[in-house]
Image 1 (tube, helix red, strand yellow):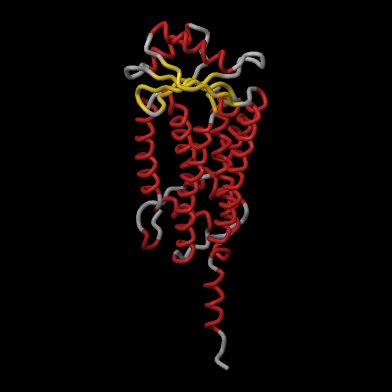
Image 2: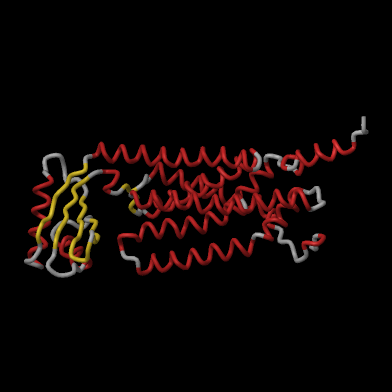
Length: 315
């Protein structure tokens, strides 16, 4: 299809919007079903537990440490470098109200000393369940506040229908990312929450670029078909979307493959989030705006008023 001076072939993205929305609806329903059946596998940041900082004379071998702890009944331990290659942080889920943090810490040290006599305990801390509940609440409020601020910004910047579409796309991304972690049973901690907030920012950036091009084309393309104008806009921004997404995904693949266990979940959330965020900025945000009846007149009322004023007879 040739579109005036814009040239090139326009891709019919919106011809598949009903299929895309059906798929998104099924995935969202599946995510909610998983939430109710399995829930999220919350990490120590949210459930509480014991943190043990351990020092080594030589750089620590994390794989060996995890293996030793697993052999001594601490298979659920989270092990990561802390400050330097000779310091590690071991985090353990609560062992029961009658088991003190000092006891757990000493058991960890004793297990590690079997493999390396140079092990020294630096500190032991206990995070109570109430702290984890506060973090859950604050994390949820952070996401809710971000979505409300985005809704207000896009409503003022563009048009309220696009604001609803943008927030719908962001909710879509958050729900599906959480659904992935629920279905796969991956640990959900503060790093994953940070990744989801990053996904919200990434997806919003893509949605804003598309919305800005749609508004620009509503003003300069002499076509009254909203769907066709949106297809033109999506086609024009396709190169930018692909380049941004592919370069980001390449970096995340490197983090996922070689970043180690500590950021494995973070990289997983971002990889899935970038992919699903690119999809939602193309289909969900624009499809919702179309479903709510956005038109050319909604985005250029000031142009219409100016043209009408030019037609008024001189007094």
